[in-house]
Image (cartoon, rainbow, N blue to C red; front, top):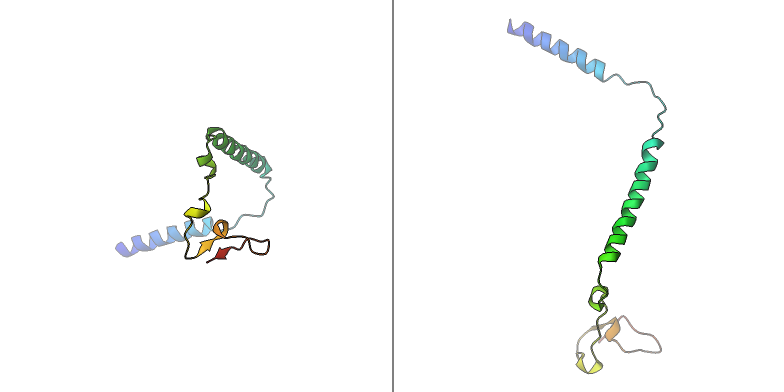
Amino acid sequence: MMRRLVVAVALVMAVVTATTLIPRRAAAVDNLVYIIPAAVGGAVAVILIIAIIMANRSESDEDLGLLPGKPPSERRAAGVHFGPECPFVDGTKPLICW
């Protein structure tokens, strides 16, 4: 009795699997109706986010990352220095100096 039930369930599963895995015929589908509004909506969202960020920022120098530099007398005398702390050499500023 149990063996017949297992065979019947396996047969039903095989039929269902075979009917769902048969590929459909290829058909041309026009998805531009969805693609164009999604692209326009995404562009508008990006513009709105940038506008909100720009409108909410303050006008202080700290927000822009503009801080006064150290005067030459406060710089370290020894060690490795990078870019802005290096003196000009032959009219150019090196990236690293010591």
